[in-house]
Image: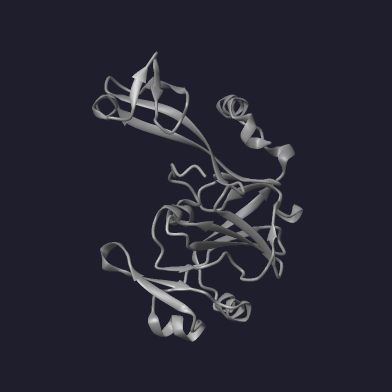
Length: 243
């Protein structure tokens, strides 16, 4: 998974993949439910994030994030940056493999349209998916070998609800959910709870509606979506990600 996250609709959800969660699991969720090796057809499609109009493509073997943003900055900022530069009349950004054209707003400021395509989920090693009770569960393993879980629910209006399963790090609450847990100290002297719930206990966790930032994904008709030239060029350069 590409972890160069951007200021996009799922930033808060997926940035936690790079951080140490306060509550994690010993196994991917739901426990004892078999893995699936592709995303069910009911979720496939092009969606717009309700929060900022970024695009999410849900496909058979991956979930992609597309966004086009206007970048306005000063030339001095670019020159002083260790990672960005002006090359061949364009703007080079470290997260992209191409030089982005830009225009001068004034003598010291420039503006560029930046198109991003990021893979959010693709069944890589350390990524497991399960389907249970009409919900899609996406699990990612952290560097310690523990699991975080994200849930995608399809609502009756065709929207998708995309949220992180996040349990507050409270000892009494954790003990009310399962007796099978351990703890360890992580950054900032925080305590991390490592849960090993049974399927029945996991059902109770789901019933509590623990969520971290629920993002609503609104379906878009493919026929009504016309990508810009920048998007078309980028899609051609990265066509292998769309297969």
